[in-house]
Length: 450
Image (tube, rainbow, N blue to C red; front, top):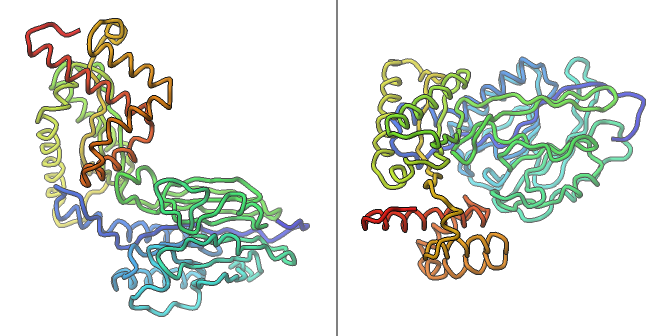
């Protein structure tokens, strides 16, 4: 920030990726009442945002793209958005927003007129002067640019250059991917260096749904994440930042939760479990612990079974997991029904989305490595590959070559590779699977397994 004796302190709210009216399709086994609750959750999170802005008496709100979930946003979403704008307007809180790849300005949709206190930046870089609500004193220059189409591949960050004549705090609104972060399209790609060299004080980013601060101070580079998780790819607390800027231009950021539904993936070791009864009890205990810890929020949970133990084979191939999952869902459905016509008791619902098995057999690896057997040779080759990236890559490509020829299998392999990016983790799983198959065959033939 340009040096100055002092400036007017102010407060603003930074959020992004509202994705209003997300359909939540693809979830199986969910009761209709719970599905409606999920579909309403993005609106509830946005209502929480509005209440927070009013309660914290912010001077203005900045929203960094993907306000709607789809370019053909529903009339319901637009009406709910207009209702929120009106509420903020009655409290004198201006809004500055940009559009991203999900809701580009060039999309075909009914356009409701924006109220005067809401500024929607166009497809060319624009700047506005924000004032402090208490005395109308200028406090910040806010600049932003919206997407005109769903796919923007230009580096929009290069358009942002600080006005050297202004001592005010400079805030940039950008919906884009900094340094090619995985899991999101490379729209409006830029580097952290680009942002640092712009001269802006605060980069209010959107597009990446994981909350993260890429740089602290001179400038602040901030992804607040989305305000409501929408799948098991978006786990953990979701919300926004309240930013206080002092007279010296120093910023203090406080994260505030806005989500109504929390998506979780929780590990549950099986190492000390020796029976199906103990496993069932541990699953129920784990879900109850989550229920007690969620502080009034509904949870959608996937349990990941980890570790080694005698239950590995049952979890890998038996129907017990599917049966327990069905029973747990039945109990949560009853809990919903007991709530009657009232809204779902959010803090009391822990919906089990599924189980994921990352367990292994109990084997004496050291013994097998020294054994003159096919499995011993396979494990020795695996140990060599673990220490040689070239050998590991060669083995992986050779093993998967025939599978990649099938279109469906190629897609499934791609999904698996995205889920497990570490080749050594894939190697470990392959070794465990081979051991389970070969040792299982020995047992079935009447010979003792190692």
